[in-house]
Figure: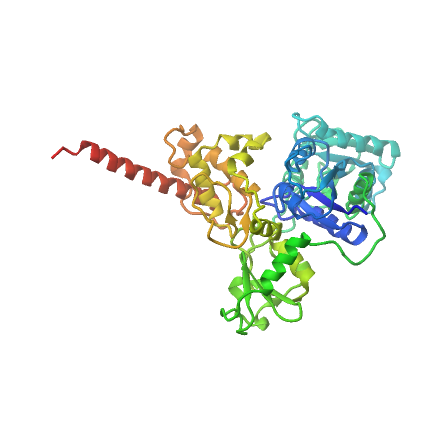
Length: 544
């Protein structure tokens, strides 16, 4: 019988910790309720990436379900490209992908929208209320709005609400015109977005005219010009969405099986997992790890992994080796998903390799499968890439190859100079626990440090390179003319990072990575000036 895997593909975010939640909820639901050999999340802006998740699947076939709202840019272009659909060189061990339609266009999402509005309208009958379905919209891709209008038409035909209409952020009719679009005094507003983030929690409420209290947020309902607006959170956060994900998987040919409380799916590839566990168990002892001389510990990024006894394992932060369990918090593997998303200072970690893994916890008594799942949660695809490197099959991808396949707003990354690439690598990668194996065009090599290989530039580095290219000066690149914005703001930029700025907010000049880039740029320029000065001096020195 052919084994099948399920990949739930979402956008993710370097800034918003809630962006990945709907994908992870759907993944857990699928593990409990469907007969898949493996179930994996995959993201555009988080880990594992669309490309890397392909290296974690043993099954012969994999169904990709896009947890996106519409058949727009990401579904039509980005996902097929990143999953290598139609490519012949994805590798002999890559599964055959079956591509499902996006979750947001499924007819069942109409019922999810209606149910969300009904639950929210406390004490108000739907016959006396209008329903506004909000989408992002874009004039660049007409398909982006199609899903919204399809659901609106279906809701109108059902006749549950007094009025039903569509509103958009980036095309007419606009969100801010909500009172002009409906005549009812009670208006339920449901954003057809996958996750809650800046759009749904800040921008849309402001456009609706809802008052934002810094302590409690916007009221539900909120009164605007004597009419009440009942604003819901993103549709993708609704528990019913997990059912729609499974429906899409079934439409693509997956067998859902019988519901079960036991997750039998493989956490990592079988051969890679066996090699990793053997490596952990073969760790040399007497290295000062913890308090038992004959127990060895392996360092995995910022993790310390120890084989204890009878096939059990201990996991903790590497800096907590030697710390008594009584002084640490006991955690389960399930806890790790949320725990490792934040640093000790409470700030969201924008990429998994960032050297900010929280301390003060441990997982003990893990069996083999729990250990592999825990490691894959903290560092997705790391075991598979490590095992591939040991057999000579890693196949690193250089920065230029990743840059050349970018489209949309990231297409300009291909225009980065060699100096800009090297500066971005120095600013970002030197704060990563992974060991870079790909060509960083002059960035300092990390090939001798750390066990976890980085196969290709991550999405955070690509986003940083774009931001640096647009808004920061080049790194010792005399061939590149500075832009007007660079010349105008150079003297005003912060010289130190601001701890209040999210580490993933690359748009802020006080972001830690933008400050690191400027330091790398200035240091490189100083080195260049020094070399030029010595050259000029040598040329003007009189002959003896």
